Image (cartoon, rainbow over all chains, first blue to last red; front, side, top):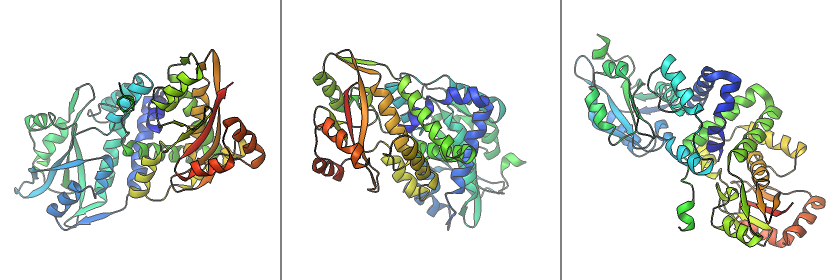
Length: 206
Length: 204
């Protein structure tokens, strides 16, 4: 109920604070939530990926996350420094459906916030909630340690409710994953991101 | 179409948690009174965004409530106990709260503080801030419904939060409400064992 109420109020929020104000607000909320999640440590990627699959990590708060263990991210020495992770359903889709069946349709303000973010921060948002999402993941990654190293999150691709897609060429280049691979993943998943050991020497850094 | 087919899909609790954090962030800026005003506005805005309804008579309205086809039954299951007394088995905020408690920790104190403010200023029926949304929404939504040409009035009788804490109006206020709802105090107690809210709907 609260989700639908808030979705229908975004327009009012834009009137008061502008689209950029709503983006800042969502990002601050992402920071706040991440700061309350606490730290986690794992012996290595295997134990971390099992924890993700079983829904035990901070990332699991978003819903069911699949570790794509066949899609490793390697550094310049070809050592594995991360993996891709994906969600079958965007966690905002239920709210979009609930709004459709209670209020009638999503406010156009949803697109306005996403557009503001795409133009000025990172061209990856398909709805206003992506703004919160990306910041939240970036922040919690800092508090999760795999083999003693904190993680870094790269949001790679998103698929909206109407089928529109966004792919971050900037982040794909960084972790050296081809766009075709990610595009293929979007047939089955609606949100794809990479988790990498912070400070790893990635091919994209060269 | 069966009643289960018209029910809304469940929300993702993560979105609800994010919304709670959003409200906490807001409270840090505008204070408890400001949060209360915001939640009242939020609920009124939601109700006003939903379509108005009309029913030929009270039995038709009760059937719509029971089948989940009225705006009052959009976010929660409604079980009519008498013609006027309604009971909601589960709070629409339960999943969000449980996930918050599991993943984030104890609910921030500001939610209770906002409820205390609402109890003092509006009506003594809230345990947490989310009850402000719930009661305001039901009141505003009821006013958008016409049964036999007359608008509907909402009054809460009792609320129970997920942890079992109850909010019931003082006796001088509760007794006339029970009479209008057509239930006894004992019956109210029985309903509160396994329902989240008991409320009154009547022609205005």
